[in-house]
Image (cartoon, rainbow, N blue to C red; front, top):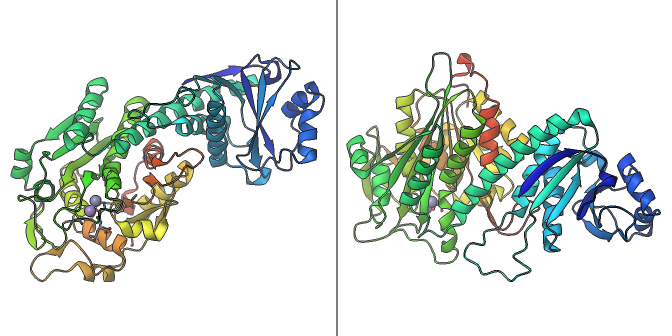
Length: 506
Ligand code: BES
Ligand code: MN
Ligand code: ZN
């Protein structure tokens, strides 16, 4: 989609369709007044009669019968004015574009929605909502001609010249970030037999060739030498070779922080020998959403060039049962030497993350954030509204929480108290990979904690948010891409980490 930001009077635009937002109960803004007048008061009548009630995301398509240069108006409800936020901007933008696309309209012009936040933020949210909302995964589907129609262009009109610069910057950023999130969705939506560990490694290498990002892929031999038996063990049952992908942006400079982002890349999770029930097993292609999220975040860093040294680690494996597979009861040693009793081969994410977290030590990072579809328990606890957040450092948790709020990819904190660690004690190894069935999300994080030292660390469980079972205004059913915008927000606003905040209170 071509996105343009232009200066001019909206009412004078010769557009295919103009999108106009209305509050419920409507405040007659100067823009609205001009349209209403040109249409002989038709908009006011629609509202008065109750034919159009401008509730959030409700739409009404109105032909202009030659009374205006534009052919049509799409009225869209913005909801209550005092409840209007940047995320609602994303929502109405996504809804408006989808609606227009449904009518087969190719070009849309939109007002800059009336919100008191900075113009850059508003236009960014509009671009994000539009790009995220129009996304569909249709590369395997033969579309009917009317389904195949696409909105080709969106023009955002700015009626105040002083706001033009900010609006342009915001729209460009929003489009860039949302397109990266859509690439993450594509990777996650791809069937497990397409998006294999090798395929993800190749995608990363492609990014490396196009950008200044250094990409390295560790082979199974190197992993053996490093003692990464978590990744190797989980990958053992599969015909697909495991890959450990390392992305590096910038380099370590004195006085500059190093942040490591780790993403779980289980390209298909059958459960292994502790095999999952067949009901919903098809969805386990999304178990690499963490890796997809981190990879896409690096796509954005390559373009926006933050001032930090960033490392991305993507342990990628397929978890399959076979004669070679790891067995329940096996004991493996992860990188660093800690031994793990694998009581359940379906708790595989933590095994590959253990190696990746241990691997972070060579970077002496300022902070580590891992993102993973780790536990079904997190879906039960938080649904698709929030990711679970656990960590060892309040300053880092605060930064992640704020980034999540800003992106509206919200996190909810769960405790990481020592007592929760009891459940993963093993009598025959250093640690066990499952707990006692209670507080599954927390015991998963307690397991991971054993592989981080004093480094500030946050774990994000995205098992719930990474996949949508039904359409939402700017997240269609399927892979959501959730996490990309949070990570971008976190890193683009990164300020030097205070030394005193090293390992605060739990
Ligand atoms: N990938 C799953 C977690 C998951 C479940 C993600 C549902 C998304 C939706 C993970 O590898 C897993 O199987 N976890 C087990 C852990 C248990 C065996 C301790 C779970 O949550 O059941
Ligand atoms: Mn599993
Ligand atoms: Zn898994």
